[in-house]
Length: 344
Image (cartoon, rainbow, N blue to C red; front, top):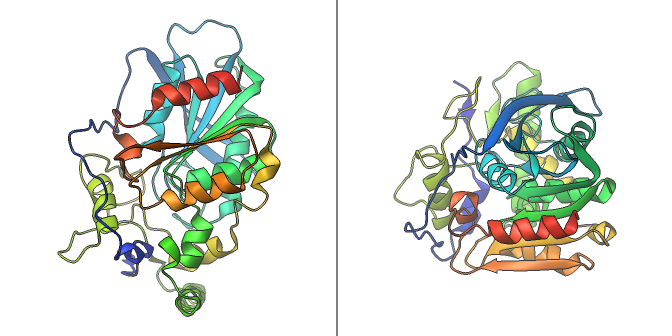
């Protein structure tokens, strides 16, 4: 078994208050709709790698060209975790939707598995636009395609949209700016010396791998909950390590899910998704965050940098992971209205 390194960026949240985890709200990560058809698909990126995805549409969909939305999953997750839920709910409202596995994760191409390469992650969104505008399953209006990113995919879809004006409207939910998170930690809790130590560790691991040593993994969700686990670690454990949201893709193991490779993890240090975010205007942007989310700083930062039209929507009482699957908290009606108006 390949080793999972104990160090975790999530430990940087140790000083933060307990996250909102109101168990009375419905958690329905694996929601299925009898009104929606789901079809597994795959398509090529500009770099001739293959992205695995799911294609959703209303069973009673007419043959007129419809608006479409590309949905990206949380960082370390796969499309079966949160992305399929959002894609299904939006398909029920008449959108054609595609949930993707970003490269190196789930069913998508890329070796080593669980590697970090933000440019490839962003490219997956543009490749999905390519697919939607050229496929023959259901007609899509090329001028009415939007993007939705959950958690880390919020920063990936923004990165894609800066270079791809075919993405006409952008929404994020519980967004993480993965670059800032890795460089500074939550609420600037990481020092430069700590970052340098992480970079040095990752660089040393490259020597290990080039000499035939085992791949090591870092960050992600605790595999076993401990008494001294932080509130943030507990929040993620409740989703990824229980029946609520646990999913192990083919070819992986439960112990490796959510964990990126140590030697590639520092690629996020050079990832600045919010730099130039104002270029997305006049395409509209909607940032959704729980007002109790440990990640709220990232939506606030993106909103402050973005140009109009833009909206920052706070969900009262919601934490970060709550917006992955708690269907009574996720503002699906507002998302529907946003995309209906923006992709009209």
